[in-house]
Image 1 (cartoon, helix red, strand yellow):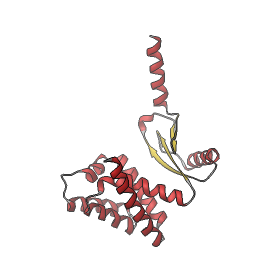
Image 2 (cartoon, one colour; image 1 turned 90 degrees about the vertical axis):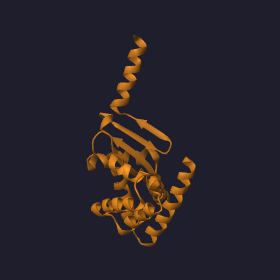
Image 3 (tube, rainbow, N blue to C red; image 1 turned 90 degrees about the horizontal axis):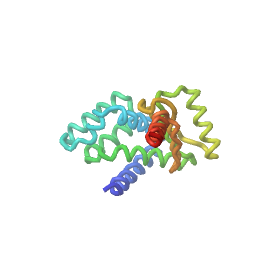
Image 4 (cartoon, helix red, strand yellow; image 1 turned 30 degrees about the vertical axis):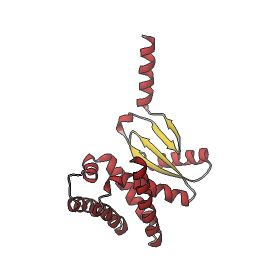
Length: 183
């Protein structure tokens, strides 16, 4: 089932990419999708809205379109999400967002990186992290930022299959394991 969802997500994301490219709206759509991705991680209610099999197509459509309008989403993004609701494909929206952003980065010659921090990073901090990643990777880096207060402090950085976890949560977990080994 997971590979079926991935295939579905890739097809829809590629179709959205081509439409956004024709309409010269690649960055607008990417910005909208990044905001939706953050909303999905911040709002259990929105996640429930896109995943609930109990809601009708019409209820899901009205709900997600209201969210898109309130967020000021580009017309193409709103229409895309509306089509997903009509076709009962909203459950795959998170994978579609990732597939679209990955395709955009790939075509621009960028490497996608995910940075999770305990608190929102300031613009200078974002620039510093992006520059450090660019030096390590050796090419342009597209950074997707998320906030997870449970990290307590530090960062988790994922670039491709590599992950660097310097969060305080992980350091405390390691310390706790080491203390159990001593006792």
